Length: 171
Image 1 (cartoon, rainbow, N blue to C red):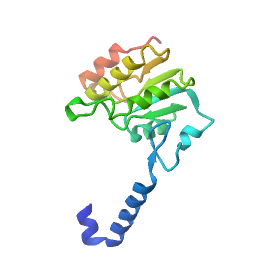
Image 2 (tube, helix red, strand yellow):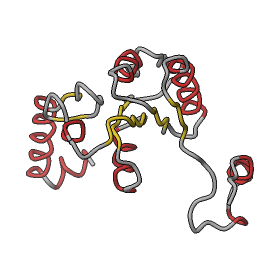
Image 3 (cartoon, rainbow, N blue to C red):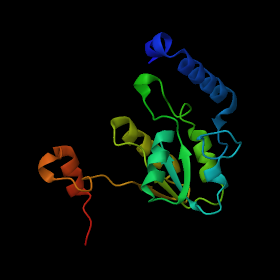
Image 4 (spheres, rainbow, N blue to C red):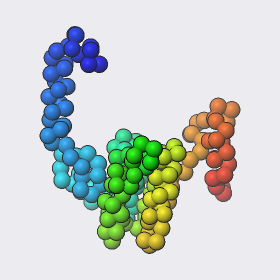
């Protein structure tokens, strides 16, 4: 992209540079959810239409956007801005677990929904957070995993199919 902009689109390169400069000067982390925002507290956290008793923990801002696009969750969020990865030097401090712990103890949160990815690091992060919050008087839940809607068994990997069978529910 950089080569294209430098060779063929100087105007586009300037617009991109200006946008990045603006973002660096004006974008910060929301004091409540840690997501990116131009405000001290983001629009989602200021909303009176969301359930303050529910707190969904996601790894990245893109994960929050996917949750919002699915229209399946109406609670609050906390964005870790990463996941635990000791091999990469990412520990609890780097993903703001101190801020998450403080947020869960605000007297409003009753349930923490762990919505980290189903990778080794995401699972480790969810487990660590679950253990961290275990004795705090909160309900701790984990998003389900399994077969995609509209998926066919013959095209699903064996790990996903096995997990779907293990996490089956009564009808």
